[in-house]
Image 1: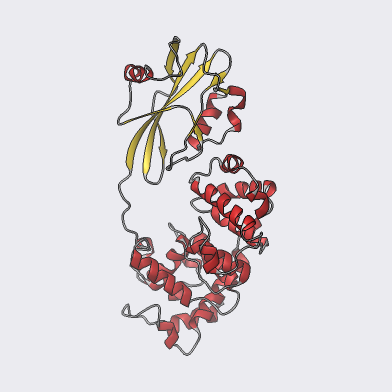
Image 2: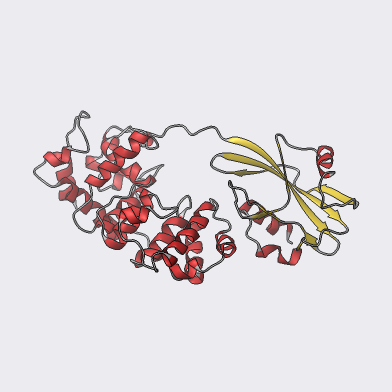
Length: 378
């Protein structure tokens, strides 16, 4: 291991005025082989024992990658295991109802991932006759699969020479080569993909791709990276310049908007409530929720009552209104924060199409609604 570090230190220019994408091709030693060998050796010792690393089945790799988008491993692994148990093959997933898929996905958020997963499973099953695509070009054509996921499946399952670039890879490469191009810019995405592609080894591509991602997750962490025990330390420009905490560079996100949600939790004397399905495109599409009044600011009880007069659910019935949570529950999404109140409305009867409270847990709901259902103890 030490001899590799020596070569990287010796042949990597000390000057900042170099092109990191081309410099190693000028060396008499094969830089990408040294770089990849260090990472693969590190990976063989330190990799986590995860179920999707014990298979080359493209369906299972695909499933794990989709679940782990926007989701940490400790949260996503139980979902992966539940999906594999209920839908062990792509055909089994294709034959499921969307409501079943969404219910099993409940709590993971970003529900478009589940809908796209189901859509593509049906396409593979019905149009491709259960033959999973093998090339990056074929994989990226599937709904819900981007460059990263296509690269992961193609390299891990079929050893195709295509580099993965996720948040962990951005971090490792930006620090090692001192690249300050924003990773969420068009230029940055292209630059890092090109560099990652040129660093690919000739063999063991799947292992290398997993190694560099795992290295970023466990060794070259976002905060407090383990630089003192890092096998790439001697060649790392960020370590040399004491700027690991400043890389990678990211453009500022767009401003997060505020929305105020008022959910109406109807309770009738005969044990019913009302759930509505969100059919429009946007957050929580096809999931169920309590009737919603959306407002530009937090509503008082009196203002809410004025809204209730137009609700057909009451049909002139008398009702008792109370606020479940005095303080807004803030549910944070990537692009908006939802300031939420749950209003309890007790009334004598509700329409025939109302939902029996005993069946409320059978419906796929957003995590915000799911948490309330648990706390209210329906």
